[in-house]
Image (cartoon, rainbow, N blue to C red; front, side, top):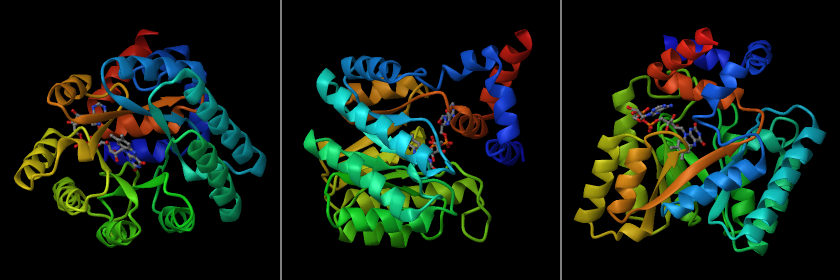
Length: 303
Ligand code: FDA
């Protein structure tokens, strides 16, 4: 119930304006967001690189409604890829399709992704298409398939809460496409998504097994220790080398787990968001864990 309310609020623009005007909110947000600028993001990348992890940089923003906004967001990614190369840091980029125009015009979105992917290719880098709400799933996959036919440095995200995901994994793997598996962070109806957490977790394990045996380099995007343990055991049982897949975790969440995985010799990638448009991202993080909400409220009222 609380989760549903928070996910509903994450899409309310009026509340966004209210929350973003409070400095106290910003302080709590800093736990999940590296800072406002690209330089803040790069500093966070330097830190995780020094600890032995790679990263993926996300410029916060989504659901743009004007072509100019989509083009401006694309420019930020092009600049980020130049700076990543100049600074010699080990990170790729993650991009939300609705930030680069999916809901304005699918062709514009594809064109913007093409520019980002080509710039990344110039530097031997990689672009991950994040997955958003189910109103975007098919369009996102259409853009991905079109681009994957031309470029091998683009990957996608699959959410294990959707019934359709097993078939999508099969189709993507036929193209040797790289997948980040995650449970899914949006509010979805039971007609298209598993309503129970256990079902989502079971489907994650099923799809983890399907992806790991494929020989394609995939990412397991989760902080769930049980699923991480099952992934390790499955890989060991099937003699799948540690270096042939990676665990991916969000900036500021379960950092001790990140260190543990690194100590055990696994590849770890940290998803690092930066930018001013933190509200929907932050609200989804609150929704995932009610304890975060209480921490936020405590700080909010303390001022
Ligand atoms: P689960 O929610 O069961 O959490 C397991 C444990 O992790 C919790 O018990 C808690 O300890 C910790 N934890 C999880 N979330 C936390 C939080 N917010 N604050 C504090 N602790 C927390 N989703 C999506 O729809 N599209 C996408 O493109 C992506 N991309 C993405 C990238 C990466 C690298 C990750 C790790 C996740 C995503 N997600 C995502 C989000 C994902 O779908 C999911 O909502 C979160 O990862 C939470 O699910 P867990 O798998 O961590 O399990």
